[in-house]
Length: 84
Image 1 (spheres, rainbow, N blue to C red):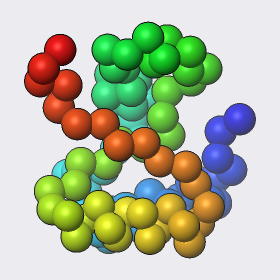
Image 2: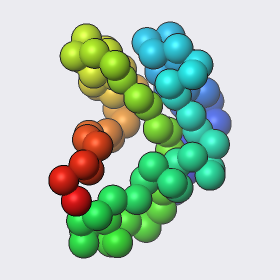
Image 3: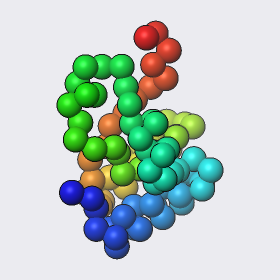
Image 4: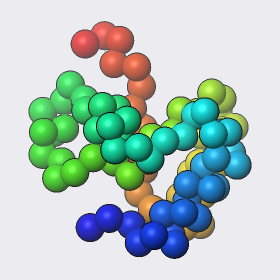
């Protein structure tokens, strides 16, 4: 079930405030591409993520988690996948 429009907008704006517009996307093509991973459990997902956020610092990650707690949305942390 997609996040309702008002909550979606609040979360998007919050992420943009933390990271800047170049590092947040809710574009379906982007979320689908970034939402794939190499783990078998990735194939069990029912849908793509709602947002892709690309933090650059530990502080960015902390602020994203604070935002997730405030607006009660789940998040997943995925690194580069370089070793796959």
